[in-house]
View 1 (cartoon, rainbow, N blue to C red):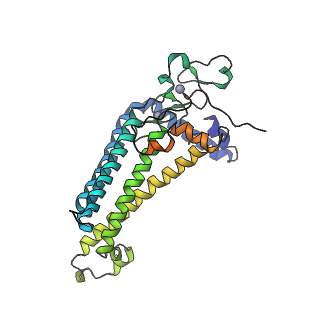
View 2: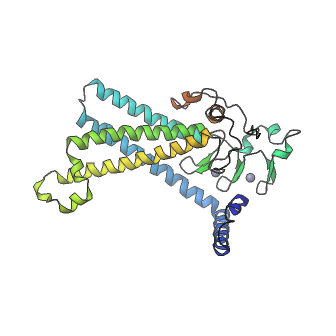
View 3: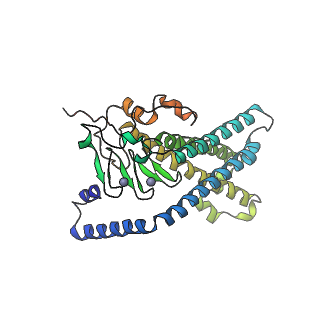
Length: 302
Ligand SMILES: [Zn+2]
Ligand SMILES: [Zn+2]
């Protein structure tokens, strides 16, 4: 809250009062209805994402692929294998991200208190009523302090933080990769059927639909291409944004804070762990992190 208030210094007093009021109403609402919000938003997000992945998987592999490739050819089989591998990775990283405990409570009991000489780096959480490690922040939805908190992800039904950010990155990577595959298949299908011509809204208005018996069909696949394009751009944008954060060792919570930037290689290691980019191949590849989330090197200021 303090950080938020500092950024409002340049705003006029009236707007600042309104922002404080909105912030207080928001916080009070979450305090009162946290359980209801969590019970409603998390399952809804999970069902929505599962339906979207399931629909794209079935549509692309069972319908689009047989239309653009030989169903008995090696290319068709390879596309099936690639599709299954991608979906397994999405679901695997999703499950690992959901099950990871990245809260301060998950630390061994002896690491939940600062050792001698570290106490000045820890800060007090008034909700948990205890001191917590640097870069840990309280999540109002999880109702616990999270180690190197990045943000709360409703799809993960969990906070993205120190212990599960690698799964979130791989989850976004495979969502982008999967929707990228679907975009290529849909692009070829649209091109073969000359459906791009009916995807332009202006052509829809002026076109004489009675001249083309396949108009409704082309219209459907052209719009599915547009939906696919949107589903490609969103995870790619999120993945690039997350990689920028990882590259500079920032978080969404402290977006402008570069004080923990110790060089891009070490910054990457802090999130990806010892095996670095191998984590993108499978969520089951172990990649130990260099810190338990309580100790952070700060950039040396000369
Ligand atoms: Zn807390
Ligand atoms: Zn949370």
